[in-house]
Length: 175
Image (cartoon, rainbow, N blue to C red; front, side):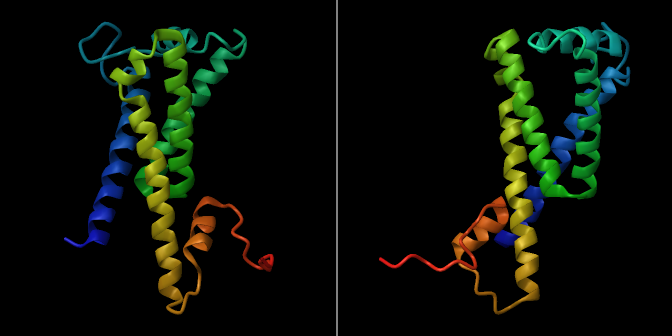
């Protein structure tokens, strides 16, 4: 297997594993894994999820907590669909990483550091950010395939991937 092919399979595995984790959590809030108290359900319904979410979001005003739970759930569903379909993959991966990082920090602050480590929340966040880099690399490869005489330096490619400035179009200061 070539390196490029292995990278494609790895990208697909990351997309699918992150998306299914998000969809599983959303489904649990809607009772898909059984009612509250059943062996495979963490929450089993929206009410019990809200109790958990409010505990994690203790630092938010009580009036904002219901909206935060809805927004987090909507974000998880949207990111899952985008990850599966590949729609705006880089942005979905970055959004997933940010959401998971916030979740992990909230877990650590309210439940202790062991909780996000036991549930691999920071690992999933890192996987999301890695996927964003992979997606940007593939996008760049596609652009370069259309222009076989690409003269972009590595620094310029990094700037394209990260959205930062590379100094393209500027003269270098003389030394």
